[in-house]
Amino acid sequence: MFGSRIGWLIPATLTIVSLSSNIQSAKAQDNYNDYTFSIDYNTFVTFDPTFRPDLGIIRATIKGESTKPAPYGLDLFLSDDYGKLEPIENPSINKYTFNSNPSVFGLEGEPAFSDRYYGGANELFGKASDSAEINFAEGIIKGGGAITVFGGTGLFKNATGTITFTEQDQLDPSGTPSQGLAKLNFTLQTPQKVPEPTTTTSLIGIGLIGASLVISKRYKKQGKRI
View 1 (cartoon, rainbow, N blue to C red):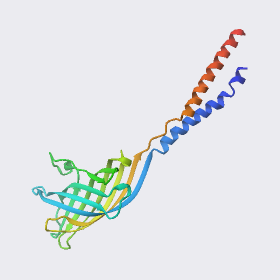
View 2: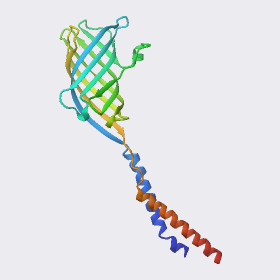
View 3: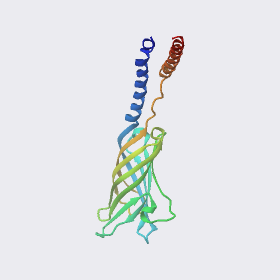
View 4: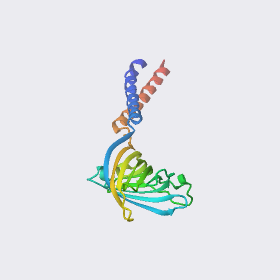
């Protein structure tokens, strides 16, 4: 008799176990929101060659304005970096390695910088590592590299990922910002919240527990009568 009374309980219990397994699977397999998009920015570049000429290190500030309304409102960016002059092979070309981390170039007591992409409720923050060459003969600046994303706001809260870019600017030797165009490719991830177990699932679980207790008590009473 006990077997007949609890026979229905086994498939129901398995159903609950299956529901629980599905929730865990969703968490493991669909953990992130992925974002992939590109933005072109008009750029304005300023160099400060007086920063540490003794070490061949300059400061660079780049401002960007999207050429058209950007995805997720990222219409603007601001980038500050340190640049280290590489050994000169051609007197008409200066090559620099840039990084937002001063310790990369052995600088002490200097602030670490970061890139900011913004324009609305959604923002991104990243650390730059790139390179560029200034061709004085041709009057152009060419560069490219990557930005490692470490956070953001709005849709991009806790974002991670990479921004790769190429850039070319027209060198302005007068000291005013050199203007050009940067092409940026964004590959981002943000954590995705996993849905909590539904109220229906919780009620079914509570009901099964209650039913099992009732059957257990009845079985014990029958055992005492035998």
